[in-house]
Length: 93
Image 1 (tube, rainbow, N blue to C red):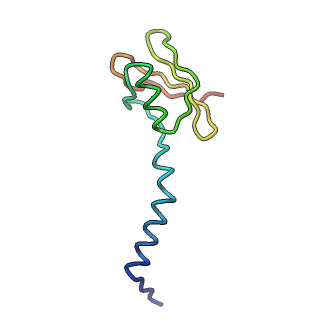
Image 2: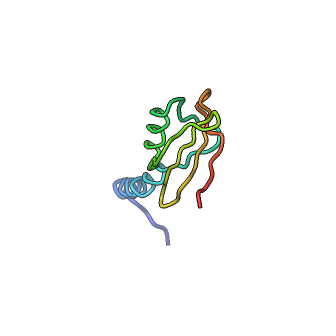
Image 3: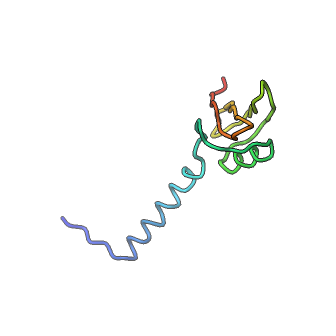
């Protein structure tokens, strides 16, 4: 059996798929090498825009350490203050 869809039906399906996948795309996880900023304010802003809840950012051992949460999981993210790049992402226990 061959299914034939009208242009309006295809458009409806495409719009529905966009609504289903958009939240997933908006909450992409930060990875090593991503640039998030060189100051606490830039880092907080970049992480918040990615969907993270920022609990704390502190500077320790010459690096920024951000404690964040996403989708019920907690992470610690280390950032190089010179480049603004993520050095390490650890899942917090």
